[in-house]
Length: 138
Image (cartoon, rainbow, N blue to C red; front, side):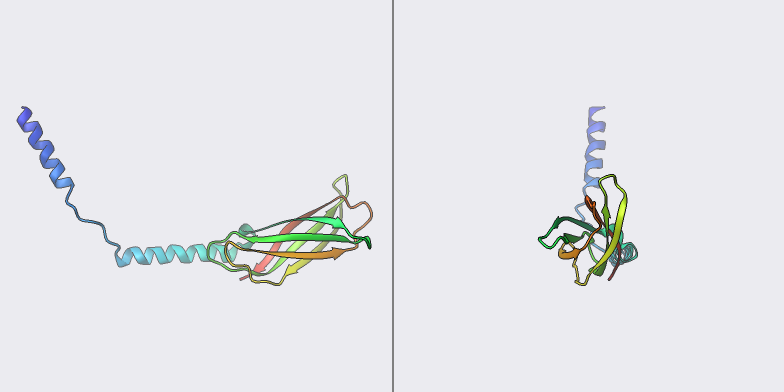
């Protein structure tokens, strides 16, 4: 019985370890290219999902609000340009006081960022600022 069991196990091990390594076929390459194109198309259709913005404000000596921010491209393939950033100024209670737009006229490659600075005469009582990506070209 032990001899039959060891013979079965040995046969199984020898047939399962044939030593052939898997090679990449042209079909695999086509599937890879298709998935890569799909990712590129997704990034082109939804730039607001792949671009983020972060920044802050301060007052200068003239009384203007100086906004400094940085736009980040988190995409893997697409380079974005002409990014439209909506800047919203809020009161202390959270009421929207003013909305402006700033377009960043730079090409932002995947994994990189671009800084911008703008000056505004904001309404009295401006307490905070927020940023939102509206659109971008590729």
